Length: 384
Image (cartoon, rainbow, N blue to C red; front, side, top):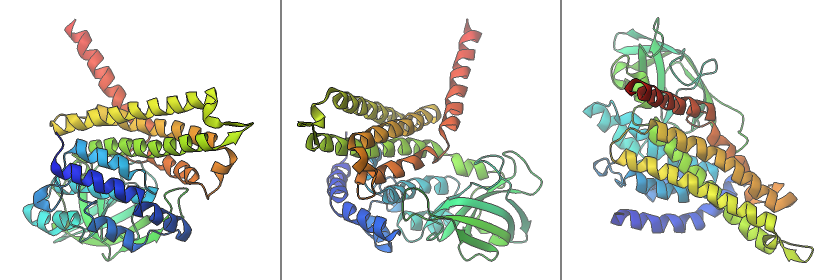
């Protein structure tokens, strides 16, 4: 049963997305920047802590409720969608191994919007996993870090970078560390990368850490817990959430396509009267609903305390692939005019491509899924 807070937020989110957010989208596209007032507005309305616990200052919504709101948020500009998604997800990673002192110092202020932290895993010469090459060595009460990170979102505004690295001489999952590196840490150089194809205004950075010194008190968990901090309680719900952002963006694309098809007249008939267009719209709606139900199913399992690695990978895989199909068909229905930057569908089409990179590509999701398929099959053989 939905909570009173959920019904309240459902109403105000819909009103916000259909009103102020659309005007802000135009400003972002024209200026090429996400102004500070966007962050302030989203934070002041409580939209950046919907999924966090009440005793941290969050709204305390269950995951299924939050995802239903996230679907609406995904009707917004891609950069605004990313802010809502990341801020409502990262607290889990921070909180997973935080001490009481670190919870008061880092986690709760993050939830309350008093400082910004960004996830810092990807490197220029390695994948986003156990092959990280950035190293750290202990020096008294500090760690000294050397290495590079890149494509790090919010590098222009982050107060702390949650840097994942490893003790020198270790490999694989052993010796990994999660260190909160202040923006002004000595030895940290931040270079903003070129603008991306979509999500206009969201900056990504190339971080170079050269003898970068960080207090050991900024380490989350023990030495060796780095990858667990990165993935525990974060990756699966985040993948599911990305799947739902695909549902939201696709829903908006379908809405625009259907409206255009009813208004656009060719050879004396509206496009919507033509059977080919009708079939496309029906296929798009079915695709979207299938993705939505995959996400909500994973959310219900998560809320029930069950593991969702496979379901999250399926939700993310199907959602991102579905979004590409729907936005492509929506652009086709708009015709040539949809290809110009004055068209909202053009922006949605550009923004949509990013989700296929977030939290692992489609190929990574398939690897997660097939491991489960093969394990279940093997179990079945052993029982026969």
